[in-house]
Length: 157
Image (cartoon, rainbow, N blue to C red):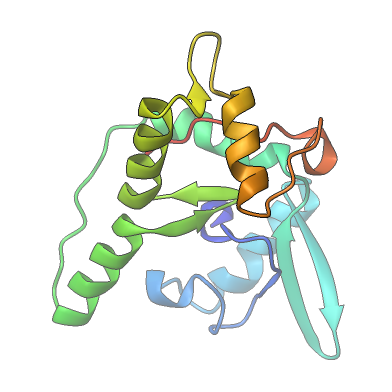
């Protein structure tokens, strides 16, 4: 369920949350977030009578992704055209925690590396020409990202 909270914005713990399409039972959509909040993985916010949860800190995304990268992949059976379209769209492009994910992000990374905008010599890093290119697009590139997070990082994709 912590993987379901994959965007920056807080999600409601009701059936309208990100777990709705994962078909979690309503009781699980209440009890499981309680355990994850108690364990420090999720933080909760009250909005009127509703409770919203989000990842407690950005580093949690990395701690969840690391073992997930080593887990055997399991194909999810597609039983409807809607589900097939959803899986295709998520596989193409999405926001994954605080970075881009999907085949589009992989293609962007490959293209930026081929143009010399990214370097992979000692881990992924933006080159000087990459910073200039981003600046030309109106994207400012500072010394440290939000909360000291790296600007460029690898993903499971």
